[in-house]
Image 1 (cartoon, helix red, strand yellow):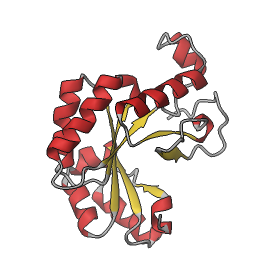
Image 2: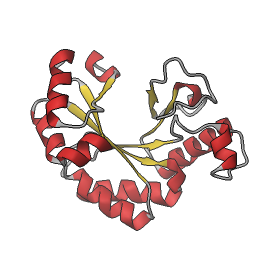
Image 3: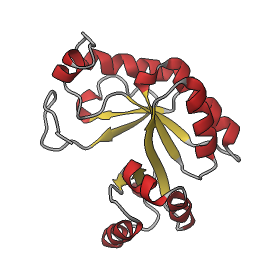
Length: 190
C-alpha cells in the first residue's frame, strides 16, 4: 500500500470551495479522500467524479442503512458514480450487507468499489446503547458481533473507532476513525 493510501483525509466541509481550500493546504495530489454526507448532499455525485478525474481515490461515506432491496438499488447507482470505496451500517443486518454487495456488482463497470460496514458510530456509548437503542450487551460485544456479521455477509472490511478494533481486523480491510483525546465510553458529542 502506497503512503498516500494509508491515511484517508476526511473532506468534512460544506462546499466545493471549502474542499478546494482544504486540498490546497494538504498539497497531496492523489491521496485518498473521504466525502461524507455534508459535502455529497451539497455538491452531488459530480464531486466524486471531479476528485477521481484529478487523481484522488475516493471513499464515499454515506453509511447506507435501509431495507435490503433499497440498499441494493442505491448501491447499484452509487457504483456508477466512481467512488473507490463505500459503506453501510452493519446494524442493517446480514441480508442488507449482502444486498449492498449485489448492488455494487450489478452497477459496477469493471471493478466494483470496496464496501465496508460501520460497526458503531463513535458517538454511541454504553448508555445510549442500553437506554435508547435497548441493546442490553456491552458495546465491545456489539462491535465484535457486527464485525463477524460483516465478514459473513462478504463485506470487504469494517470501520470502527480505534477503541473497537479488537479482533475484527482479521484478513479484512480495517479502517479506524481517529477519535483523539477520547476514551472508550466517552461520547464525542457530534
